[in-house]
Image (cartoon, rainbow, N blue to C red):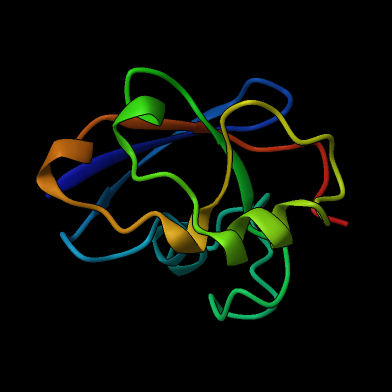
Length: 107
């Protein structure tokens, strides 16, 4: 199992367990976590699963591809240096303990 920490805009933390191969978005949505809307269900056609990945994991992720970069232009909350779409973060064992900050709003 992989541990994923979600930190809300207010600072509240939720820790969830995930399976290898799940996306961070799938983990959040599966648990009914507020803060990740995922309107498109992970099809990379919206930006409502925006998160900010904390180090050291942010630098361990593959760079976002052109499609993800394009969709990140449509985030409702300001985009940061470590902004990613959680549907594009597929978890592996090396992501155990990853922490993501949730934006104030996805809309």
